[in-house]
Length: 160
Image (cartoon, rainbow, N blue to C red; front, side, top):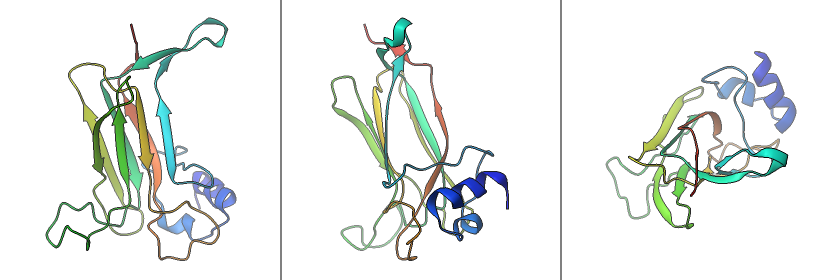
């Protein structure tokens, strides 16, 4: 077992996670504790912990083990296809700029990516729903548990 996955097993108490999740880059595999939702707000650090609100023009994330379909393939899209992993992009005013499901890549140790780039810095916050349930020791195999790996984003620019 690789060291990054040892921590994953320790944190979530589920031995099967060491065999089904594959990190894209070592020591970066993560998930929120007791949740499957992560929110990231962009800022520019300032003196005396005085962070300034900021926006970025691009953001993307690498995921591992996204099994449920993204709704873009054949089949009935009005109820029979259910996606599990989503990124929502919000502007400085809190309005939704864009959202999309992450493409599935079924099978253990598989990788998926979703990212978007605008022509200007307008993303102030992202909300990531990774899988359809939080990881944990009681993962019964009926849920799509997905983990996050790398985040890629453009240098945040202070909102003026």
